[in-house]
Length: 81
Image 1 (cartoon, one colour):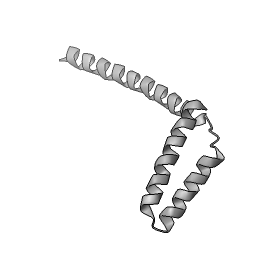
Image 2 (cartoon, rainbow, N blue to C red):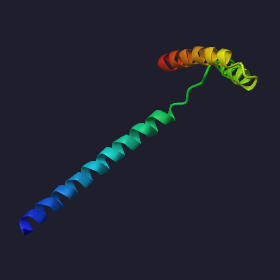
Image 3 (cartoon, one colour):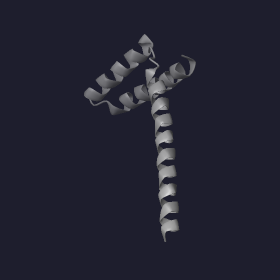
């Protein structure tokens, strides 16, 4: 019984260590991804503002079209910046 408990304890300790390593790697990855500051184009910023205006005056179809275009533009800028 003592052998089983010792093996279980070692297994738990290895899993804890592996978990801590994975958590540290993930934290570093998230930190690196958030540190890149993107400068959005004026056109993209204007489209986002227009989307909010359409939404506030309840023109939801126009807001959705504007959002879709802005999302495509943002994806393009993320890819090439």
